[in-house]
Length: 556
DNA sequence: TAGCCGGAAA
DNA sequence: ATAGGTTCCGGCTA
Image 1 (cartoon, rainbow, N blue to C red):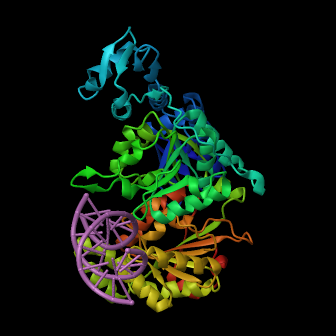
Image 2: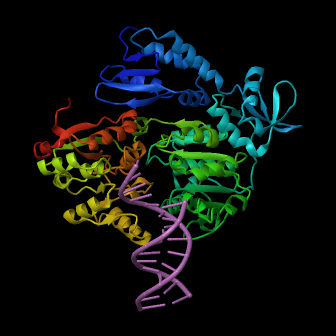
Image 3: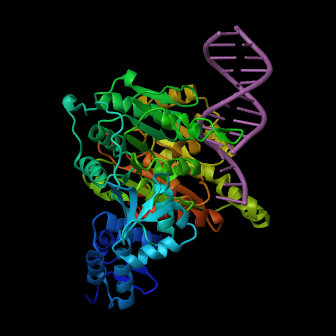
């Protein structure tokens, strides 16, 4: 095709022309194996990475499909060396296999003698391996299963793990569908492809019911389950949901958190509490050994802290399910998620779930604010480490936030920011309560409840809202500042709005950004993940907010 | 003695 | 690279 939307370059970047009529089709064709790097107005840049290719491979795509996607949407002839490289890279996945050998236990097998020899010679890998048995098989110490996979990925020969899992202690868990609900198609598919794959990650948008996918996995496993979550409040949401949707009762579910230390057939623990150390010793490792867990679920797997990676390396014989809305990590440890939790087993584009009506459509607007002369000058002379805070917390934003609120009078609105001073100021100006880290769990619950009941219409929240807090009624969010340029943060924040609304109306997400400053740069970086999911931000001048209603602003 | 609060740690 | 969130713990109050 000579007029396709895609330009394929030999440096492994793909340029996608957004205004082309086939751009959507091309986007979904390349999404399984390419990562979005830049998303300005007209041309988006994707990159083909080895990890993305291996994920595609684990998901059942073969090199032929990848090549076909590139060739059919490409405007110019696709560089032949790139195609060869894609075929070769994809062929690396699974050349080595971890297999349980009836006589020798865990083994690493390859029909390709040279590859096996190459990795056996590697100084870091050799100590994990035992004796050769036969031409193509080497013994692996079972305790090195996870670390070996990490290393093999690092040297470019990711192993496919066929060594299987222990069943764990049996425990009856059924989905309680009597109450007139059933698994949605994508939830069923996610649970099935996780189970068939053995271990791995399911990526679904915020608000699409990831907990239910976890419950479905538990019902498949029929075994005791350890669920790891980011904080106590989210753990309690899990518990409520499991009681409502499964045969599990209150007594069968334990909370292992800062406040309680219950260990039950299904135990929900916070990452914080298990990574807690006293005198350098991990205090709560007992949790992993206290029961013969058949399944470990990692909620918000994009936030998995380093010590949990280390512990997970020792849990390779247990089935592991990672759940997240945004697999991108800001620390570049995607490879460790791949080797220790498993490949991506299922993901659905946010826009597809939206089209099916399971999440609310969202209108994303970046509002550009012009700083006052004084603010601009303060920014100009500020030390580099002060600059971001200065521009993102500029007082001029307050009036803009007010005018946005005026436009959505009566809507349940969240004001989200990263700096507490700014949030306090906004709370005072808007006469709205502020929820931050120091807000006690009890008060949080009561404020969130009041918000859910509609008694409070505006809530100012700090990074506490980055985690899975369920606020189905929120339909407008105004972001006033963020952490660095965190893509997953932006996605989580938009995610607060995506539970479908009763009247099926759309959600509104505003990002208020100071013009001509770092704020704009970071905002652009944060938007990348959502841009990849097909959320097109409109940029609106703050002054225009005083003009015609936003919905009437002409599209560029 | 339970619950609340503020500070320290990682 | 920074600010902020989380948990734990010790002191205070009723």
